[in-house]
Length: 323
Image (cartoon, rainbow, N blue to C red; front, side):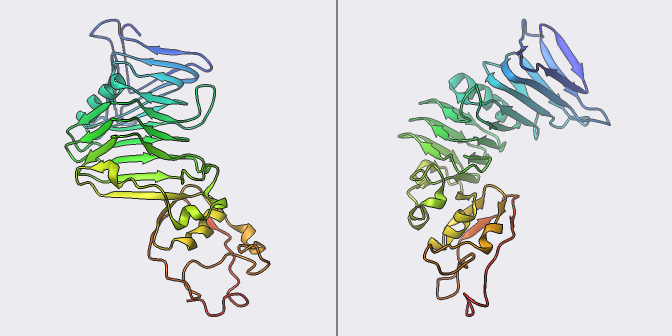
């Protein structure tokens, strides 16, 4: 793209190929301005290929409010692009793997400073990587607005040593590992790495001591080793959610009834009808969380848009006195 593309919706797609959105001069721009039928949206999608971004990509709604920009491919190179979805708009970047170096961080910061909410997301492992998000060491990603930053990884999020994600405007920060509920994926901070904001900070993770699924390691629930408080500064309220992806994970909440949890996937608990949770031939079915001489549940379980279905508890035979 050496010139201008202007439309209500603009989509550049290469099935198995490559899309290059390149600016040859300062006037080069991909622009979408909303009309009554469709607000301003730009989709740059290179399915299974590479997407290189440079120059300006802009989207606005019909009333001048922020629009929507999506940039997706197996490999996405951000470069020094100007991604401009406007105040209140959104930019979704979606490769297989994502490395945020200082150049990419500066591009993201420019969008955030314009009021655009930014989501950097990996959705599946493939030829381009394992679905990880890496923030290179000693990267400074600073913005001054209340726009939100979300890093959402198919697997791991690794904030490199010395790197800082900082909003002086109270922007919310979300770090979401294992965004598909596979049971594999956690958040790690290198030495000196931090998130700094007066806004809310949410971290979703699987216990790193059991990377193949917390269901087989109830110890992770008794005494989680992750302590993200040391990595969050600026006064923002931190909530760290241990992910619950399976029936076994759900059962293990009994081992720490004061913990903070979130469903990472829909849980079909039909197996609980004949399930031997204790492993000793007793209690066929799900063992209640709280009650029955156990401390009551005082923690948090965030549904996170997911459901638990077909759960079986034999109150009559196994738990006649359950609270």
